[in-house]
Image 1 (tube, rainbow over the protein chains, first blue to last red):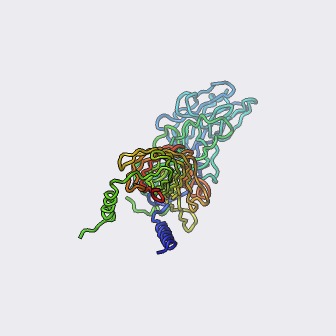
Image 2 (cartoon, chains in turn cyan, blue):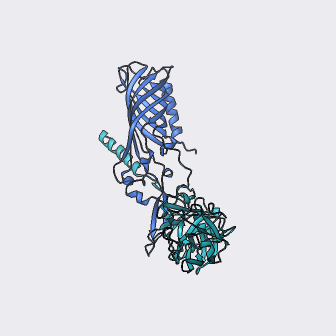
Image 3 (cartoon, chains in turn red, cyan):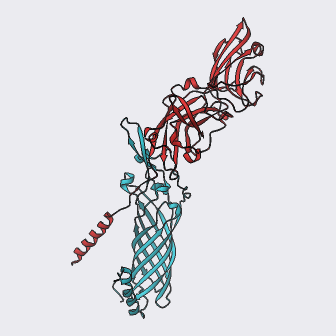
Length: 310
Length: 241
């Protein structure tokens, strides 16, 4: 064989070997992921903690005030407190009503006697401690103008952080704020199911509240069973706490991206049984169970729901 | 009937070569070049995000005398990057109503081309037919990324140096077999350049919900130490003067 022919043969053999590449750059990890979107619950505005105040007055004298609260979870211990606060005097607050417990739909209706409101400007609903300084103060309504003394006979309680003179409102995220989640089969370990997702632009929770995720079995609007997934967390898995330390401003700031994370093995219940993901505004120290304040909802996809149940 | 493996078939030939040249002299010739055809197995640093891989190349050494030489080398290899060091890539199947419902996640790696050139200094001794030697040198490395994977021509390069030693067995007055171990040090190394889905259009396919559940990779290092095991056949072109 001539030298050029031998060189050509060697080159062809080398190229043939190179073409026999059997490894692939893509390696499938685990089983399929069943995707679903997390959207703002359509009726969330009516489910948030809140309420109305109506004053019953004669001229400039307040006889009483009727408070109708909604969206409140039952607390594990103690109840909600209504404080009468004078914003014109520092640390001037007295508990007008104590030990208020919501009904099964998260509602409280109560009447504040007029005597408690005679020299005050604002009604504040709090919980977590008997004293005003130690209590969470997520709901407030200023019924008297601190400067002019004019009364506002009716109005809605604002949800946020009561911290005069720079109280901060919670603003329900618009429907364009959404998230993505997935149920990953056979991960993080074989035989397990990993539920994980994120939500973008989540406003900080109001004072005393936190965002909490739940796996829910929802049948025609009735919760048949729930499993707590836990507080939503940052990308490193750290729960988002101390929202009360957020900087003062008109509205509570947003968290750019928060995560929901659970596995079937960690939940200890068959994840296939559930149908939805709920994210609620949960008062700290609430009794175990989802708050009525469902703000985000995700629906597990059909491909997942049609899997054989354990 | 027993089947003879290629290795078993080669052993008698190698033994005959050794016996035939039992009295051979040193295979370096002062004032002449010695050329080595090298095959190597490189174990990259754990932090490098590269699987171990074979390399092949050539080395030419000009011997000033029988004990000191200077030269140059060129080696090339095709290592795979490690996909478990980087985020996953997702492939989403769209359902009929266009709401994505099923996704498959992939660990993605790429095959890169590793080229290394440099200058060496060799200090050797002679113990009969064996010649232990030490080597040190400096040069330049370059990893060419897979253009199909990264959608373009991209590379990672930087200075390199090495230290090591080995043993040379003379099989004739002008030829020998060589085994060596060297520490190949690569500077200005950035393993993130191997990430297929960290930049560009592929970043859109990076999985953003599920973190890689594999054990976390070792921290990044800008200077990596790689162990290279080399076997070489060396000879003096043209034979003895």
